[in-house]
Length: 136
Image 1 (spheres, helix red, strand yellow):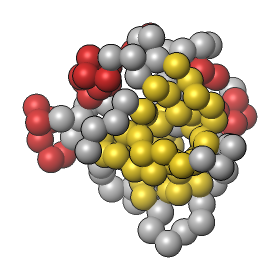
Image 2 (tube, one colour; image 1 turned 90 degrees about the vertical axis):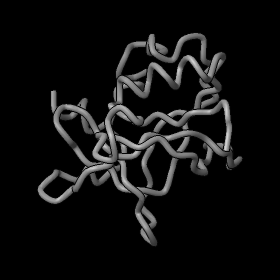
Image 3 (tube, one colour; image 1 turned 90 degrees about the horizontal axis):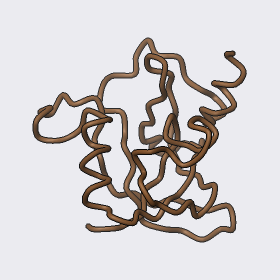
């Protein structure tokens, strides 16, 4: 499924990078959004995994990418995702359904953590920016 939207929840968010992250190029932020999942602190950055039947949400931002092919290629390298990393790549890029704060739903790319979460600290709030600010 092709889409020019991407949901970011960690170091690519504006609050983490002081504006639109350079890897997002000329992308336009459509606003804050949420995705049903669990968020973990991996190693200085977050990793989201599907929550199954849980009602927990991961908070982030939804962007419309100007040049989705180029941006996704750069992000795949940044997130260690893609064929060159094999099935054990740190993240897997998939299309999922996210909800903007106005209630509208959109199909968007997301990078999901692709390794075991046992032993990782769960970010209960689902909001990496709040967690990261509290850790400083």
